[in-house]
Amino acid sequence: MEKYDVIVVGGGPGGYVSALRAAKYGKKTALVESEFLGGTCLNKGCIPSKTLLRHSEIIEDIKKAQSWGINTGELSFSFDEMLQRKDSVIQKLRNGINHLIRSGEVALYNGKGNIKPNKEVEVHTEQEVKRIQGDKIIIATGGSPAIPAIEGLDTATYHTTDTIFDIDQIPSSIAIIGGGVIGVEMANLFSSLNTEVTIIEMEKRIISTEDEEASKVLLKNLKKKGINVLTKQKVASVYQSESKKTVFVSSSNGKETAIEVEQLLLAVGRKPNLSAVEQLDIKRKGPFIDVNEYLETSMQDVFAVGDVIGGLQLAHVASAEGLTAVENLDEKRKQMNYSHMPRCIYTQPEIASVGMTEKEVKDKGITYKVNKQPLSGNGKALAMGETEGFMKIITEEKYGEILGVVLAGAHVTEMISQSASYMQLEGTVDELAELTQPHPALSEGIMETANALIGKGIHTH
Ligand SMILES: Cc1cc2nc3c(=O)[nH]c(=O)nc-3n(C[C@H](O)[C@H](O)[C@H](O)COP(=O)(O)OP(=O)(O)OC[C@H]3O[C@@H](n4cnc5c(N)ncnc54)[C@H](O)[C@@H]3O)c2cc1C
Image (tube, rainbow, N blue to C red):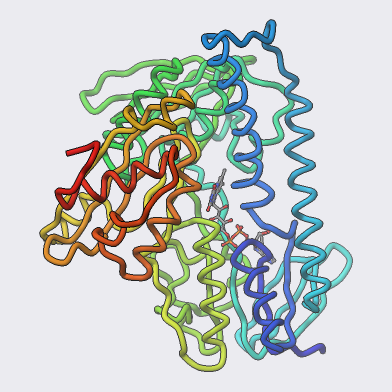
């Protein structure tokens, strides 16, 4: 039996990054993946969604440009070609990871991994079962779409994010169950493709874990696009007829509404993939694998990272956890730190945050200061015709430590790392206020907000 210093099970952003770093540290490393390298993120998540969302952004830009005197004739698009482009982006990145794995001297096993209590891993393919032995194991098996218990769903056809990126035609109408990050991104996409979209959200607002004002700005924009957003409403049942689905929705006051749609998309969260650990007596935290701050599970020399441990289910978080786990393979060296993880929503406008929300700060009883400045007066925002949104900074009152930043507006997902860097380096709001930003730039809004917060605003109060 082939022996390895480290066996990583799962080749998503948590797993393949861990494997490459472990190999770089001189560990004899194996990576077991049952489907495609890149995991959910590359194949069914971040990359297909962002590629298709780029198309919707262009469609919106073309529509907007007409009111600026730029005319392109009647707007038309080929969904087939959009899907082909999406597939080619995925393929390019898959090839890239394959190349990295090969040149990084990681042994790749294509098959379903099953971890035994003695850290032997069985790799099942259709033809055979291979057995490999690990000194250390990293579980990075990710997650899959959760399917809610809804009456009639078992006899209806529906999509999850595992299938929606491969539909062959644009639906005339779609109901999206779940108004979280994935739900609102998909609503944005389909609405630009002229699909009639309804979002059904149980909570009192969409993106309920994020900043309340960001949620409001996004809601306003989704509504402006003609998206029907139902909040505090629960799907009671689904009825499938030959060509349509009827979604019965009940509100908290008992009122029932029936919505007829061509397609149904479930976007209600994700559950961990646990088939690899079925034979292990490993501690759980709810449905997820429990780990400590060193990413160690309850089993000696077995670590877990990424969506399979729950928490912030984001690709860069999975990778950061993977890198941290590798640091701790031989001895406890590094604790996982989640306080500066950016969280991005790729809608129009985009929403990007880092650190605590105002609610979290309040709930923790921290005395804080907050300032929010709209983008409506920002020169670059006006030049681009992208004035929707704001920049908000929350600081601890006494020393001005930056506790949280929320940006809503165009391209803010590219801008949030600037604030994250300050936070990581324990910078204060005074230091952030002093940084000269280029002009004209949307990021001037961060400088303005920081200055306003310390009473030094030039264009702001
Ligand atoms: C539609 C959508 C959009 C998203 N957009 C973003 C975004 O913009 N930004 C962001 O940061 N995050 C985004 N995410 C979340 C992101 O995709 C995940 O957080 C990330 O992929 C988690 O990485 P992971 O390595 O933990 O797991 P995964 O990426 O799920 O990878 C796990 C891998 O393990 C494999 N596996 C499972 N069981 C076994 C087994 N027994 N043996 C062998 N292999 C196994 C799976 O095949 C899979 O390839 C999005 C998710 C979705 C669904």
